[in-house]
Length: 94
Image 1 (spheres, rainbow, N blue to C red):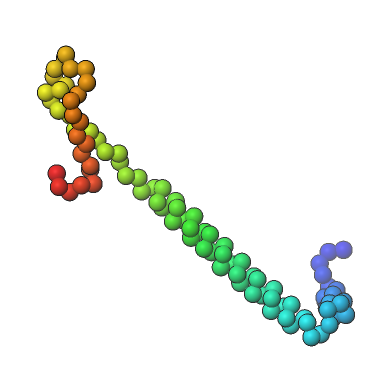
Image 2 (image 1 turned 60 degrees about the vertical axis):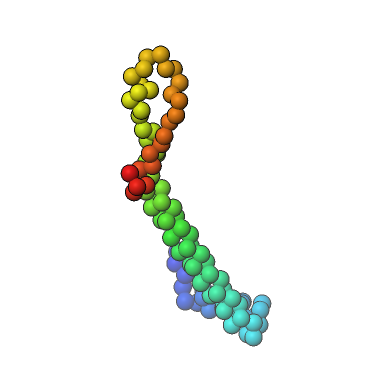
């Protein structure tokens, strides 16, 4: 009771030849190999997509900061500013 012995493999091969025939076994092996190749490719692409998503999440753009108009903030009667301008930190014009 334990590991497979060489004669176990021989018995399995004989049963496979009896069940599927000698002509179909190469086709079955080819299809299994192609399926394994596709599975490895999809797993590699999935991990690359996850790594790209993590890198994109780590790159955070700070939110736009509103500029403060001193006339509006120094006037205690003003409850609502007349106009608010937002400065985009990514804009190189200012």
